[in-house]
Image 1 (cartoon, rainbow, N blue to C red):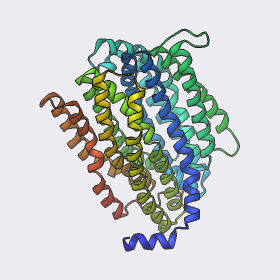
Image 2 (tube, one colour):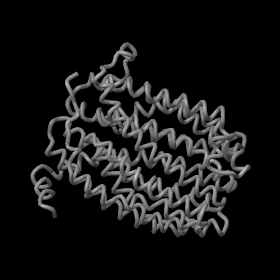
Image 3 (spheres, rainbow, N blue to C red):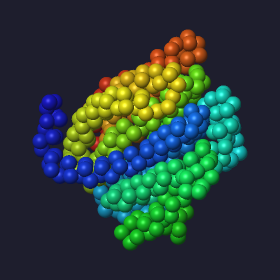
Image 4 (cartoon, rainbow, N blue to C red):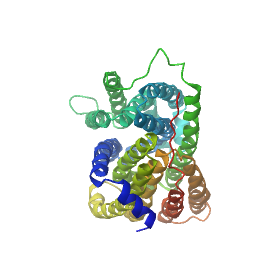
Amino acid sequence: MDQTVKFYHNKYIDKKEFYKKLKALSLPMMLQSLMLALVAAADAFMLGRVAQDQMTAVSLAAQVQFVQNMFISSVTTAGGILGAQYWGRGDKATLQSLFNIMIFATGIVSILFFVLCEAIPGGLMRIFTHDAALIEIGSNYLRIAGWSYLITGFSQCCLSMMKVTDHVAPGAFISSGVVLLNILLNGVFIFGALGAPRMEAHGAALATVIARIVELALCLVISLGKDYVHPSVKYFFKNSKTLIKDFIKQCLPLLGGALLWGVGFTSYTAIIGHMESDAAAANSIAAVVRDLVCCACNGVAVAAGIMVGNELGAGNLDKGKAYGIKLKNISFVIGFASTALILAVTPLLIHFVILTEEARNYLIGMMIIMSIYMIGRCVNTISINGVLDGGGDTVFDVYSLAVTMWGIAIPLALLGAFVFHWPVLLVYACTCVNEVGKIPWVMIRMRKYKWVRNLTKDL
């Protein structure tokens, strides 16, 4: 063990305290991430029982919300970074102002995506496929699902604020309960159960809208509790200029990184989708499995940002540094465990889903490739989105994505698919190369300790 790592591990980390905090924060977040991933899984597998085109079209249409979430997550993550540090400092008044800023920013994003889904759904679908049948199904899905995009921003702000103010469990309860409702409604509306009409892809969209309305109502009711931070209508347009500046300073790099990653990931889907429909179908299933397995690293990443941010905001820089080092080491354990899990579930998955023979063969290859990819995904998610972001080092993600994803992975995939006409699985491997190749660079950045900073100020 490196002497610096060993010193910080022994001097500043109380193992019992550390793992108690990690468990209390990460388990609800893992559950929340799992439940959210289960919605996509339910859509894919239920619609897959209807027809391959239904499943594929909805999977492609859902990329629109994926891009919207990149904007919303950059706002809520910036609020979470500052919020965790101000909560560690005990400054609840600043958290209230921060909440106002988050709601204003996500409101603009939500309105924009709602308008796009209602006005040009066909144009959005053509980004991902040229298949006329998929475009028609996906367009109709977006016209209904777009209403959920209008309200999701506010509820995500509420849930983000709950995370950093020691109300992780209620937030996870809301998300988990709403997901269960969404899955139940999927079954009712997709297949026409309990006397409802059989709506297929339209039913999946309607279920999403109803679930988001319920989520918003629960967030409003719970966040108005006396011990919760909630937005102040009276001071909605009277926030500290210094706080707004600090928020923008954190948000812009996060937005840049989110767009680079989100648009890049969407480009991967579009590239595979334009190759052939069987490849798109296999990729849709592989993406669902990836999102389910990523729940563990997503939960630990959220916990890492809060734990490191709380200590740094309270002025305990050495302890925050020690926490960051420990969490980085844990990320490798989760990465290798995720690899083993994907390989273990592949035989079961192949026998469960209904696909053409060619699509099934593509899926087997994609799962094997993804098992290696998961090592890099877990390490980078926890180290970058957890530890580095917890200390306000948000710029690094932009640099790394610009080089590894946009400078290497996407050009390789584009050239392979449309110029050199490589096999589907080789193109898919190109879309996975950025996460594994980024690991050494991330480790070097971690050891520079630029993330060990107290971001709070007297306002």
